[in-house]
Structure formats: structure tokens, C-alpha cells
Image 1 (cartoon, rainbow, N blue to C red):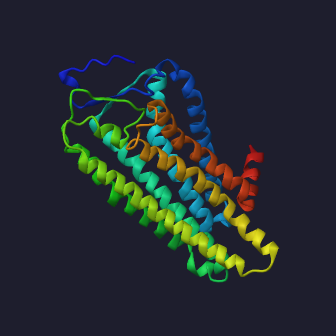
Image 2: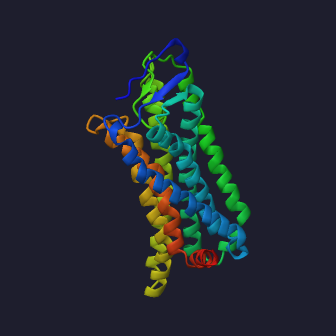
Image 3: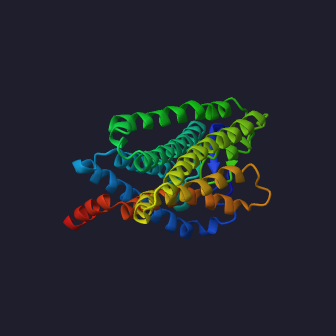
Length: 312
């Protein structure tokens, strides 16, 4: 492990170790993470560019896909540049303010991401169960407002986390055994009582994610009930095809996110390097695969993407 010499001038600086025990392999580990990050940036930026250019794609569904692409870029960018700077250049230092800012942004963006997935579930419910009213229920303006509600919710609930950490006294040991400023990784360095931080963080994660998953489950429950009332197998297949991309994105987003959040609180059986690698995977694989999933499963978007790729 790297030897960090802490001096009185380091009172506001934390040191991110990277992946404890695997420092010798940081360069090799960085290759898949950097590749996924770059591919994700390119894929999501391509979707944003194509939807902006094509007037025929200025619809609520594609607006939601653009929102998802923006959160994917934000989530990976809030973590990966610092992680790669540790792997490549051993730039381990980060100020307390920088640490708290990073923590707030990636956690808030991840909750906005979850809110968008809930809105997408509602979008699929309206499209399948009330297709004739879809244009009046989900307009572009209303979809944008739902996105803003998700942003305000994330700020309201997650702003207290860095503020609660800010009030804590920290010990001389300011070495964070992680590649980024995870809430509990920073809280455990405090010499003070972190009970409130621990409880608030856990309740917040379980409450928000739990509510979002419940709403998504409710939407798909209503969709399944509506499908049982339709006798046409062709209609069943068409309806399910419209939900495939959204279901795949949910499966790629929630399980690794919940594991990354809960394993730090119940980490007795999880090796530190496993937890850290899995946490980083959460920040690069969904942003890389989400645009691919929607590009493959959404015919209109796929055709427009192919058109622009062929022009290059």
C-alpha cells in the first residue's frame, strides 16, 4: 500500500488509496474502466446529438432517453476521472470540499437517474394502457417538469449528507480505502459519532429506491393486467417489445447500485477490493450499455443513429 505522510498542512486533505491490495495492478485494472467510460461518453453523446438534430424524435419517450443519457454521463464523470487519475498518475489527494462535492453529485445524479426510470415506467404504462390519451397525458413540457421534480427531490434529500459529514471531526488517519468519496467510507474516518450519518444514509437509500421500485412494479403490474385483457398475441408481443429496453436498463441499474450502497454497511462477508471494483462497475457499465440497449430496441432511434454513422 502506498505510504502517505500526513503533516499539519494536510488537515483538509483526504487520500484515496484506490483498490487496497491491488495497487500493483492499477494500470491493468484501469484499461477496462477507461474503455467503458469512453464508450459510454461517446454512445450517450451520440444519442443526445441525434435526438437534438432530428425533429421527428422530439417526443416524450426520446426526451426521457436523453435525460437518462445525461444522468449516465454525469454519474460516470463524477467518479471516473478521479479514479483514473489515481490508477494512472497516483494523484490520490482530494480536499474535504472536493470530496463532499463528489459525494453529493454522484449520489444526487444516481437518484435523478432512478426518478427517470420511474417516469419511463409511467410512460410505458400510458402508452400501453391508454394509447389514445398518450399525446395529451405525456407532453414534452410535462415530461420536462417530471424531470425537474426528480432533480429537486435529489437535491432536497441528499444535500444533508455532505452537510452532516461536514460537522464531524476527522482523525489524523485520512486515508480512504476507495477510488472515490463514498459516504460511509468517509464517515468511518471520523472520530465523532456517525450514528446519524449511518441511519440517514441507509434510510434514505432504502426509502427512495424502495419507493421508486414500488412505483415501477405498480406500473408493470397494471401493464400486465391490461395485457391479460387483450386476446391478440401480436398485440401482446408488440406491447412487451416496447418495455424490453426499459426492463433491461432497470436490471442493469438497481441490483449493482443496491449492492454498492448496502455492502459498505453490511460488509463483513465482502472483501474490500470486491466491493470497490463492483462500485466502480456500477458507474461505468450502465452508462455504456443503456444507450446501446435503447439504440438496438428502439427502431426509430436506431435508424437515425445508423444514418448519422453512415455519414461519417
